Length: 251
Ligand SMILES: [Zn+2]
View 1 (tube, rainbow, N blue to C red):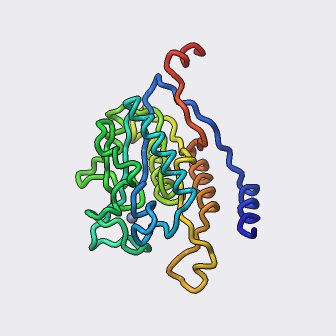
View 2: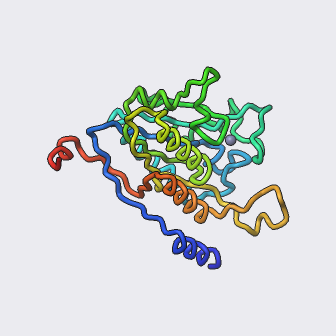
View 3: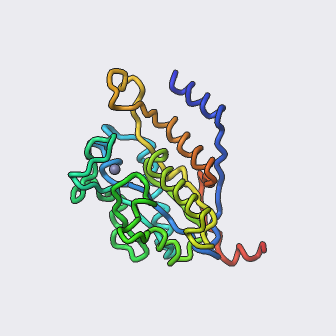
């Protein structure tokens, strides 16, 4: 009850407006799925995987799967980030996780079919932020090229963790857009909250350690969405497509 009271207080102190967003089929919308991999989402799969079934993570997987199918049906571009680390390059402050070549760094079973889809670009990254994780040694950026080549006007983002890799990617993308790195087309960055999740470490677990920070799930999920909105992202709790002809009737 104490935790619920805290969450209620948080939501009254920093209220977050979420909206139903209708995506127009008159322009290209791209979908970015961040780190929906076993190492973060499958029970018992690794050091940073959930220890027990988790409702928020299950709903995130179900909704991101539904949306991914919708994008594939419409032949719209999808970019998939997979956290993948070399065993000799740890990512402080986290314990070893999602090592290249292990199943931890692969998509969860519900999304594994994406690997066979023609409209899907898969990018393995070894840092929190998919924007920086897309940079090549020659200075080119796989994500930037993907946005430009597909003429993406609207970007929908889902995945884990709302307040870490999703937020970092959204912030970098908005900064890049504002500096003109993403061409003239990209306008809206939408965080799809129903297809996002974060992990749960209640404060009492961390009382006797300085290595692990408390991370109350509902609280941090809300904060992550709020901070993305603060940077200029739109936050959607429902998404649908408006058919092109129907959209034109209202012009
Ligand atoms: Zn990592």
